[in-house]
Image (cartoon, rainbow, N blue to C red; front, top):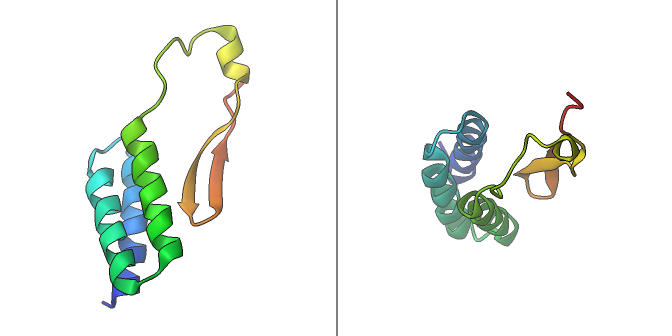
Length: 92
């Protein structure tokens, strides 16, 4: 498999890990960053760095069961450079 193909495969695995709460997402994203550096693709490298930074920052702590929390701003994941999967909290 070529380097770009490995990057895409690891990116997909990282997204699945993020969705399921698997801590393996960090390793996959870190490897994505290394592959992007090898490709000399700044866009992919920046994407991997942003994803790692967001993952390491974690979600804000606090009550999420308050009624106003349901109507909070959408959350999302950058699935590819500049492409977001947004989630709006359910009303109930």
